[in-house]
Image (cartoon, rainbow, N blue to C red):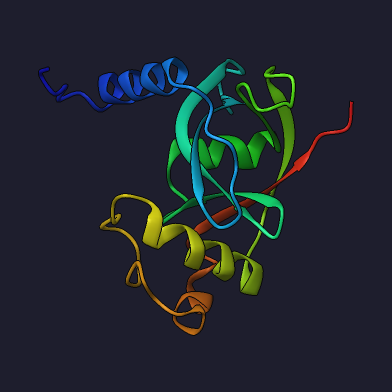
Length: 151
């Protein structure tokens, strides 16, 4: 199969692959691939993206090395997202998203990064960094804690 050179085409292909695969169950301390959708901050249209969702202490987290990514800015503006096929009955589930920093964010990054499958070149510390090495950077990295949205 030919690799797309356009990042949008690559992202669309990744989303198709996640949607075609069986849903991975969440496991404590293990990232699980999901399709997350958030409303665009300018368009108001749903913007799906494939991402690892990490469970830590029974809570769900989304992580990124930087805050400039479109999905990060969209989620920060919207405050809510939908994870496809995430409810117990296999339907989509809505979550509120809180951008967090400090120890909670450092713990989520420390669990997620060594298992992410790649190292983001913009990450300001090593993927296997300690909590003490990660904590000073949580104001420039991204960690969203997801909580079930109220109906």
